[in-house]
Every structure is written in structure tokens, then in C-alpha cells.
Length: 252
Image (cartoon, rainbow, N blue to C red; front, side, top):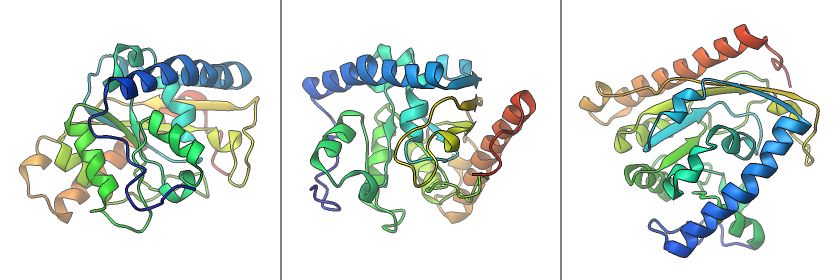
């Protein structure tokens, strides 16, 4: 068992060479090939807009809709490759819910290696996990998070949490909006075994810059504007996916 909520599950803010090398090798030579085979050979994955990430340097935040517990694992290795080979900071941080992923010591080890910063649902916008995400981005990292904070139950994009606007404002980083559909068929809610022969569509938008918002006060009114722009960006990618490939996952 891990010690949920006591801070022992956080990775070092400045990891040493060994930890960086372990993450680099494990992700690039273990996870990326395995997920690529699963997503491209055992399933059909189509991606548009990847050029928006290829030419972008960290720090930045990737924000997407949320369909399954393993969205990060399914999507990250596909869209961040091959930039991940450029170095440790090109491998994104993730923000899993601590109570879901930190109950067994082996999984805790795995989550640390893949650069996860846990958050606890219900602890609010000022919890340590959120502060550590801001620090990670300010130190030149990439962060992949989900504005809704939880998986959709009806296939539609839900309401965003204020937490995302705090991270954007205090890190000053641009946000890349992403929309995906089809993963809810790969790992339906309640299923523990991923399915194959499914179609997954992903659209990646251009970075959203918040120069004007960052000139305003760091308060809920400014956060609302930031959040709205992010969610509009994700919905724009939804339109691109539906126009290009058709809507395949309106219902779960």
C-alpha cells in the first residue's frame, strides 16, 4: 500500500541523473513502442494537427477531453513521439487522481517513472499537486491534463475546473487544445481489459497564447476567460474531427 495524501507519492522537483535516465529509457524504449503497436496495429488511430506539437518547444500545457482512466497512456506516446527523444523535459508530466492510481507500491513506482504528479479529488485548487504542476511547467516542462477533471459519462465535453486556469495563469505557458474520440470504445467505463479493432481519432490544435489575460489580476474573473478560451479550443478540434472523419462516439 502507498501512503495516499501524505506527499510520499510526489516525484522530486529536480530529479537526479539516474531518475531522469530511467524515465527517458523506460518511456522511449518501453512504453512508446508498446502503445504504438496497440494503437496503430491492434486498433486504427488517425491523427491530424501533430505539426502543432512538432514545432513547439516546452514549456507548454496540453489539454484534452477525458474519456478513460488511461487517456494519457494511450495518447501521449503517439503525439509526443519522436520529440521525446530530445530529452527528459520533452517527456510530459501527467496528473492522475491519487486514489485511483496510488494504492499498490508497484503502480506507485510506475507512476513516478512516467512523470506523474498526483492530485486528490476534493482537495481544491490550492492543493500541493496543483502547485507542483505549476512549478514543473515553470521549470520548462510539458504537462498533459484534462480540464474536466473526470471522465465523461455521455461522450460529450463536460464543464472545466477552475484548477486549469490557475495552472495557466501562474505558469504563463501556452495551451495546446486536443480532442479525441474512440478511446471510450477501447476501454469502456467498468472494463479492465482494453479492446482492439477500434477506431480512434485525434485532432491537435495550434497553441493558445494568454498574453492579454496574464496582464489582468489573478482572480476567478480572469480564470473564467482563460477557461472559456481553452474549452473553445478543444471544441474547435472536435469540429475538425467530426468534419474530417465523422462522429463515431457520441454515446458510450
